Image (cartoon, rainbow, N blue to C red; front, side, top):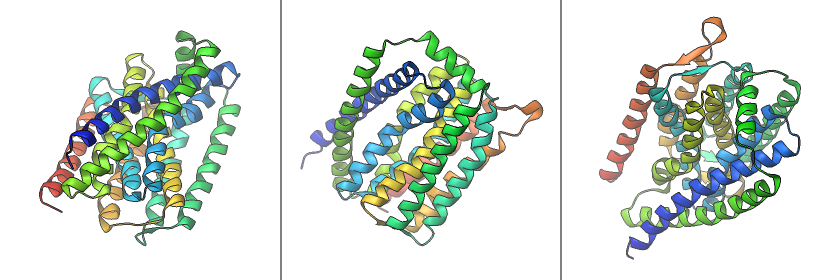
Length: 326
């Protein structure tokens, strides 16, 4: 089979995925704002869900079509890309200061959730019981977020979102239209992306996991990159960090949980000692960054360069495994 059609499908799928995810996020956030939802809750739940929507749809479709390795690689690869690539590039452009008390409360929970995900995979099998645990924890975290969003009166993340929502007003009718169009195109583009990725993987004899960790993970992380860079350009540092934290929560719990519930899968040892370990160490580094003088901590350009170097080294290692026929 010629790879021309799968390659075109992969590229078009990625482009439409990024476009539809951004439309979905904007439509969902504006609809929630018109409905009177607190801005802090919009940032923690709506935008977090929106930036992870590509991973959710791609992983669900992958699992349904019998490619659960692609689903797991997508989730873990996206988490690694979110911290090492996205925050690395963003901090290189402009140092990021973490001021939000809400985000500083979320980081230790994210670390615990990451450890939970790794622990459930320790037997090298993601069962439906494991998936159910992840989804139950996800529901609990969502409940906690909603409680925080309704209870918290003042927070720098809330201030960032208030400015964003007021500066970019969207009529309710337009918001609903973009919400619907975004989710429809998201599903279509995800199917194109998954089909193209799977066909290319088969042609080159590459595992679904590797394709998920690299091409698909980067593609589904592009909405986070776009929204994080946009936030940092406007000085909305906490919104930039919040994009990554929210996305990683959804990926670790909901994306992996949904994929495992649809299609349990055996886990290769590399997922534990390579991908899960790196994801855990990066999350730990982000957790440690929350502690700083005066209640603030900055991800400097040096930190950004270090994160980006780690990501390039990790990607280079995966590519070398592919070229080596592993």
